[in-house]
Amino acid sequence: MRYWSLSLEIYSVARVSSPGFEPVPDNQPFRGRKGGPVEIAITNLIIRSSKVSPTLARILVLCSRLPYPLTGGAKLRMFYTARELAREHDVELLVIDQEPIDESAVEALRSEFEAIHLFTYPHYKFYFNTLPGLISSKPLQTHYYRFDEVDAWLDDHAHRYDLLHCNHVRTTEYAFGQSPPVTADLVDAISRTYREASKDATGFWRAIYPVEWRRLREYERSVADSFDHSFIITEADRDFVTGRQSFPSLSVLPNGVKPDLVGRGSSEFRTAPNDPRIVFLGKMDYFPNEDAALYFIEEVFPTIRSKYPTAEFQVVGTDPSDRVASADARPGVTVTGFVDDPAEYLDRADIVVAPMRHGAGLQNKVLEAMALGRPVVATPLAREGINALDGKHIVISDNATEFASAIDQLLSDTDKRHAIGTAARTLVEQRYIWPQIGSELRDRISATLDNHAGTE
Image (cartoon, rainbow, N blue to C red; front, side):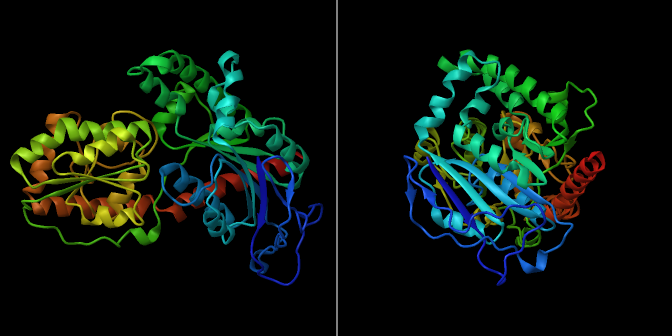
């Protein structure tokens, strides 16, 4: 295990501390894998002079992975929600992740947050953690990320903060019983994802998923009921967790996109292209994305290629599974793996597809394509959480035949592609950019802090 405590680079010449707040030690060392100190000087924790205010809250955000680089929807949401909180509060990150860590990613985060407390472990220790979960009433997800060193650190330091904010159900177990108010971003209803996965599971997972999704739903409900406030990404996920019961302490908080993504895209559309470019974006070791890509390749793309023999389907995203990577050998299919700027691929697409059949939550890939003004063909599941109208902002198709037909119709109608892309971009600009989402989050966090202050 390694424990790193990294602070922000110096913005002023004096340390600023609020009354009752114990400063982080100036020279807290890295911890080696066996717990021994590695002598490395640590920069002083300096709070930005521009943010010094007696009304600032000190917030510790618990993350189930290092939220950088921004290579997947989970990291995007963790990073941008934390950064939006940091607009008005002093935010530190507590990160639990697997070794090795990309130290350049840690450095990139230092410019955004007051401090980063990073606990890293070998991969196998996460799996060992799940063994007690086989006979526990709590879900494997919470066991997977539970480490004694993190518990001990929080027991010693939680009182320094005005609020603990947990990202993902995996980190919530650490916050039960702590003294500051606690909020949680459940993100998706993981229980719902597991329930859907249980329908097609084989081998070991065929036994695990039916048990795990039920344990997860009970646990997600307990978090929503016990914490001061919690967030989830769509109404459908909220309804699944709550059973459509009233849970005022569980709010829907959708995903967003960066403001500079809106309007960045090209306004040009190729007229009836004979060599259409169709793009799917996602983290490709995530089962719902893997399934969607392979479903399109096997069930939809052959129909497209029969009419457009030079059509290309680009699968864009990091960590392609073996099954996805092997599809690169198929005619017209390109599997890119990691790319520096996925938006470039989306922007060059004639059509973006989101043929999701599994999973939960709001699909960032859909929002990003819409922000760039690209027409999107998606399943009903992929549209969840986005108030997009079929035929106006997006095209919804529910099976392979409909999917191929919708793509063909859009390729042959440039005006329709342009109209849908333009309407989609306007919708995202009005509702789904991070500053707007961040304002909703900060308002709820402020209300939580005010309520807690009123009870003291």
